[in-house]
Length: 131
Image (tube, rainbow, N blue to C red; front, side, top):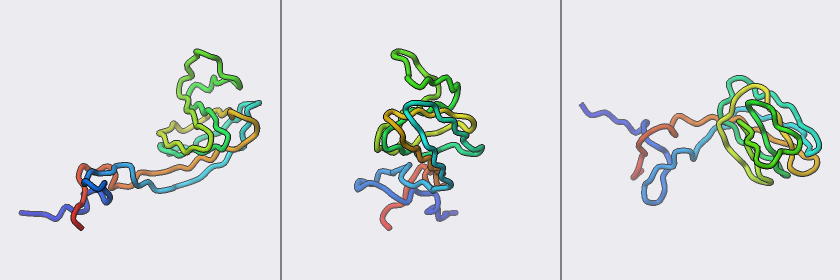
């Protein structure tokens, strides 16, 4: 028996019909945090957050795990669970809920954290074409 599986297909594709798996995300919640390059800022990522987009006009470093990040990161030292957000860029990453530390790259600024959720269609293996 044939079934209509069009609801199991990617809604968007490239011109040559290749799927765009992370094209669609749904905004869920938003946080703003004042930050500085002169001091660490503590933030708490709420439980249930697993993917987020980050924006900081002056750039920053966020550490989600160990929280051993110093105000001035030391050359040659690896900081576990750290994420670089370059100036004026949006970075989307998986994250760990709980305590985190943030240090700005230049002066006083702010960090915007947008919790996002992948829509159901992005995890599908096929896409809808010829519609």
